Length: 506
Image 1: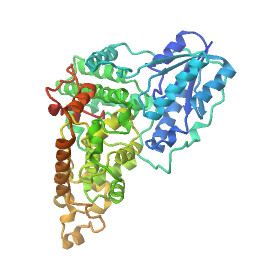
Image 2: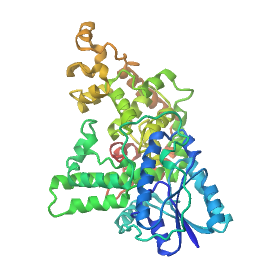
Image 3: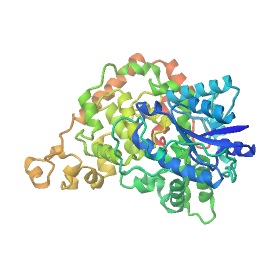
Image 4: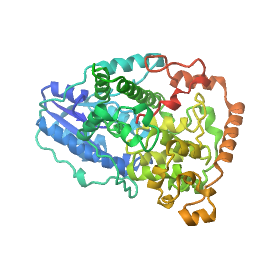
């Protein structure tokens, strides 16, 4: 009997339960990855994401070859790939990890399960994150997460029996249906090897001061672990990251400052799964507001000019534009700045959350649907259980980039403007612009303070008129945090503000 180990967002061999289970059967295993063109036509996918996956497939193939096997890569649908493998090699089992993705992958997984049932092929899934499928009670989630993280990580199979050579598509030169050119020269390299090196350097030295340095775009590049794309595509196990971070923090020679930093880092791993669980419990969050009564707060099409200027880094607010241009170039941005981009789009520009969310999804190399859609809504004031966070782009700029280093790097139009003027270049006089530059930088799309006041009033008025306690209670019961070692359940919905502060894993 032959077993297919189907790889999705789990591109590694270490701590890979389906692969280990297949190896213990001492029967032939086909490690399979399918490039699904229809997936790459979805509005939240991009070429930079595929580039990271392509790197990771190379590294995965190398790992599999050390165990006497090799990766089989096909193109098309998973069901067609399985159908052909059943005809040619008589597969009897499909082992894989659960995936909490968007609606498209959810429907794909259900179709694969149905095909296996119809064709007498055993189908088994394992969870790789602390995310529980068909969770009935949020109160048990924290304990289940902790138990999973404490279980010993699995070693990679030393021997993986192969069925012989099976042709693969030329994935190294392939560009699937990701729409349009997607230059991302600063994109991180995919694969387990780069991910493990990042983890080692972070635990050894970069983690010190983590909790203090992750907010500024200047310090976050080094202070953040930079493991987010590796976690998103499973090149490094979240459980191994957690356990190594805990071991490093508990070592007798570890200084208290480093211990505190690693404790903060581990809490982010916990919140990573907490947010993915939201989409697992309610897949509709990809498309509609978490608090259903807030869905009608913004109606009609978005202002196309405002949306375009935000997308292009041309709002006229220097830190906002620098963040967007940086993201376009690197595929990564620290959480505080991600939150600011989404909040500015939602409040000052008064855009419906969906278009900005999709644009950011395409730009993030580390796009994780479960985190992304919940966070996009949270920063847009659509959860009903979190305090509004309307970022002031000038105050954020003055606080997090006081000397304008980040701004000058990504907005060359302002390269010669002194620090006292760089945060508000629209206030410069013609004489100052002639002396320092800044003539070519665009004027602000609107008065950000006036727009923020109008947005706060509009949201407040809508909530007073349209929000019920019943719906707010439903959201809190289904998605709210719970009391546990990493978090405290709020006494009332209005007090649940932790999600705004510890949200996206960096």
